[in-house]
Length: 287
Image 1 (tube, rainbow, N blue to C red):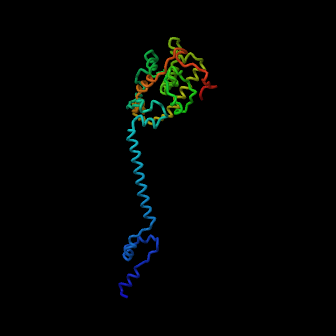
Image 2: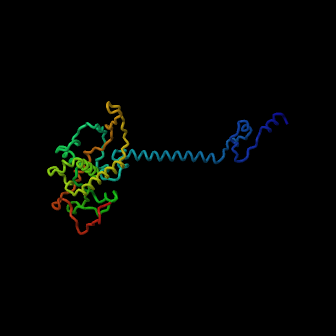
Image 3: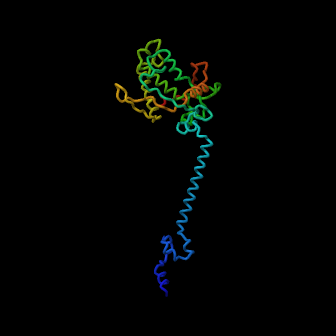
């Protein structure tokens, strides 16, 4: 046996079946038969195939989501519907939801028609944005907002829809009531007294407390995460800048929908529906 044959035998390390040493050093691999050089453990081949298949599946799913988003257009109505409880105003066909960038005016000295000492022009401005007239919705809306069909309904001859209101108008009513309550001297005068102030003092107090808590719940629910910065101001030191930028739903579009879906005015009972034989009376107000 030649010296070179002896060296080859000493350098050659037999590989066991299934051993990772197929991936061994170039010196060892140099002595493997060509057929064995092409072999890799079956689990490594399967793992590679699974990885490729998984990536392809993820790619196909991503394309599907992209196709759906493009089909829906990621419209403002669609995005609003994803982050809100159901309302017919959120339907894309309603054409209500439009957004605009608005800079809030937060300075203490800033004046507008909604703030300051009460007067007729101020009360008229609040009356408009409260928009307290009733609206009406179809029966299919009720289960989508987790409400029962025992709700107040208009007679069939007047459309047979359900009497309703829009949350933002109730919230503005509540804010206006709290505002008026802070000016009791003015609104206790007979010529200025709103209907709510004709209730007994305990009832009025409960009404105001109800309104404060409704606004609290809404503010916590909405969770405005806008950032308020601070400035150095002479004689004050650090002073907050409440004039912040917001993206707001166009209020006029909501008012337009309310007008288009206004409840019918009935020629009796002050324009409201009356109870009938199949009306269901709750023992107490809804909780």
